[in-house]
Image 1 (cartoon, rainbow, N blue to C red):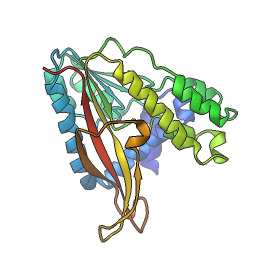
Image 2 (cartoon, rainbow, N blue to C red):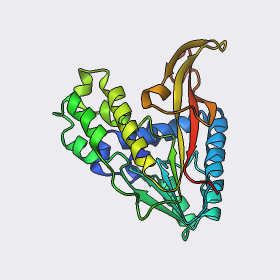
Image 3 (cartoon, rainbow, N blue to C red):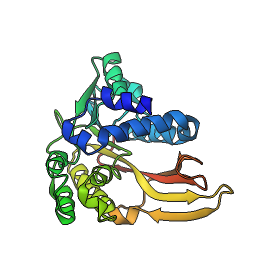
Length: 269
């Protein structure tokens, strides 16, 4: 708990995003990774490989934009810095790890504090009063604007799309009376993020949850929640399983596993 508390203090995060729980969520992810590091390794390696496969598709290699960079656990920063003139690590919560990488690769890597939803400021200001339908509409219509600095040759949505609306919606007073609100906000934010990505001119790499699974200790499937059709995505180009929360992280009775997909779009070299 002390480690998570210190982490929330050390990250750079707008007050609006702090009120919506995003600094705390970042710290919780970092703490979980520290506890189950070995279980996450295959997923992190697969994510990095997918990002580098996207880099191989690029005709020009001036700028890569990584959205949802976080602690860069799933981002091959050093390899990208060796291939692109500029690597922008974008997140509304700028971590100490990302800042360290920016110092390490001073002429190539920069941190950018950026709200990929475009909705967090307005949402935080009405956190206690906004109605469910208004919150959903806000995520559906808000726009973060153009990419930071310039149009990237490669843009990566790094395992963040399902969380863009989910975490902030849990902080809304309306969520206490409407248990469906966080998932509805998550869907609206994800669809808007996909529209924003589709407007980019370069190569796009989307890493996202395809399904959430509860797996018994003997390996049998207890529950499956599909997410892909909800967002209207085509079949992914690659898939793998992420052992997100091994017993007893999520539950003493089952492992929480995510199926992750990667989608490649845009011009190819």
